[in-house]
Length: 151
Image (cartoon, rainbow, N blue to C red; front, side, top):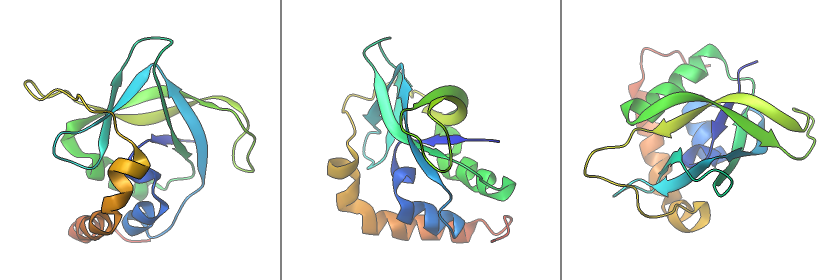
């Protein structure tokens, strides 16, 4: 089973549905040892390692992605992120995953020299006000991926 940890725009079921044509199971989880930052001039975040014991990022584990859907996520995140194995803690039982620690992939921001991440990112304050525009750009992005078949 391959799990992907999402912590930014992909936490939005609407964005995931625009990209994949469906909403796979999403289980709340926490990534410890990282901090979530707003990417400069964007409404989405990146994560970077943070102080041990003082850093955590809430998000969702996405389960049951098809190979073509992983390809879409990889393309969506692009070259600005490094796909990194991480350990996510799930606190509450769900029909899809038991509590405990789970290995997953996360897209970690690739620092850009001279472009530090300095502003913390908040889903409701930073992202949701821009959701409609983001959905439109997500739709355009998905439409551009003509080499990946739609489900």
